[in-house]
Image (cartoon, rainbow, N blue to C red; front, side, top):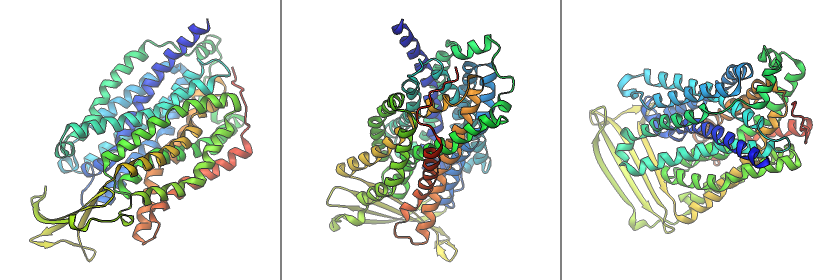
Length: 511
């Protein structure tokens, strides 16, 4: 009997996880390709502004996630878990595919960023309904006392989705030439999602409704107004706020710092070659992912609270030392240059606007095997440099290719951050499910989860990148650490609230 039960839940987890993983993949290829996308859908006059605009558009998808949580959460508590996250899957897949079809800014002007924004909003709405449905569905199939373990498999999907997005991008880059990838190859990861969504749809189509919800429905115990019962009831609203400020808010910023911010930091602040960053991040994620399941399992034994709070506390204390070490490890200022191998090439090239640019390419090599390339593009008009705000208009692109030793050092430093992520994220689905009764569970848990992750977490790349850019412009010597104040402060507030108000071992599952 137990074997049959376990087999049944593995089927549930496989179907739920695959769909959720694909939705995360869809959501993250946009962030993974932010540096490239900023040159396609936004004006190219100011690369920094274009990149920040791309991150803002990325963040917009997160900001609407709570609205998706309300809409689809209500639907899930009214008609069922299964049909609701079938709709979210198709909505996400369609929006992702269409992003890959939008013409560039040069072709259709401001319609390009507008269409991208609309599709990102649709993605955010879909993801807002997906996670709560999948976590609730799995938890309601899991034996009592094992929810942490079984729901932790769902928790791996966000990281696996990010990992697959990085690998697909890496494979596409390796198959195509840099020119082909820049021209049209970056669209391929968006197009591929439609195939994966189709497969996942066929698998989910044959799933049964959650037995706990089906039983509640047959007994007439489902809610007629999930929104009112979730947020109009003062007692339940207290738990919604506690879930947000004591857990998901801190969990959200730790998640995005350890994976997304780490990636953006290495690519834009440390200027490391994009393919190297994708590869080392992928390795760190593979090594770290099993710990989601470990901490989910452990939370069944010792309770959810101290594992989640421990992850937040470690992040608060160690982020600045970790990022300082990351930056110093690869900084060419700390390396010995092989002067005789330095080359500088100056050339005139016609740009896409059919005017001329003066391009200066500097290549350097270092004793430890690191290579450095800086390309300065001076934009000309009638043979004279274009002047903006009293300065010649110059775009600078720096690429550092790191050696094997530095590569492994960064893998370890990112892996440590992933451990913090697994501590806060592994137990949280079970923690949220157990806070709310069946009839309003989908709605009640979805909102704090998506406000914490979507707003507090989703805004992190844009806010932190802005802090770093601003500090750099002001000449701050450790400008690269300024972006960390945002996750540190948010996690600290969540840690204090969680430690004071959350009970450690509340296994009241409301069944």
